[in-house]
Length: 108
Image (cartoon, rainbow, N blue to C red; front, side, top):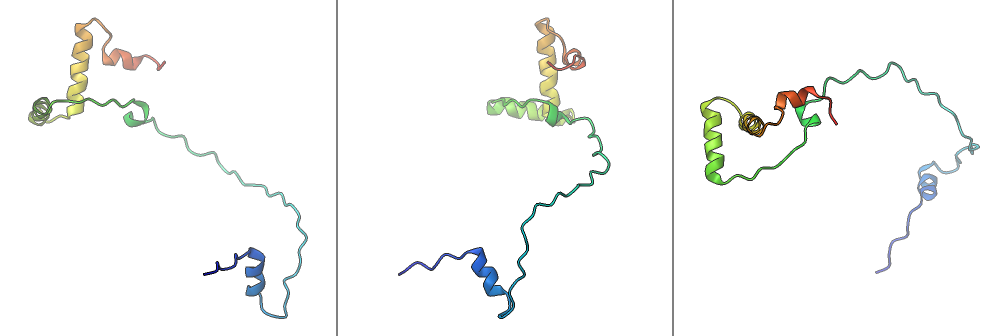
């Protein structure tokens, strides 16, 4: 089976114009258009935690995960908050700066 002929834009435009009426030829010139920039875009609000933080995966055994979830439910908090509390206790135990102290410093 032969392939159908490839169409080109000129053939499509020529077939779309009414017969006996040729499209007027226009000289091709470049036109400079000035864009109205208007007011600058509004400043964005402070970035969210998701935008400014780095993500890290933690693999927990099912019993550990279940216990953490149960603690979060019992305390009506989120598992993320409990993980941050645990990290803060670890930093304190090891003599490192707390999360609050680290948050006050400008980012590196």
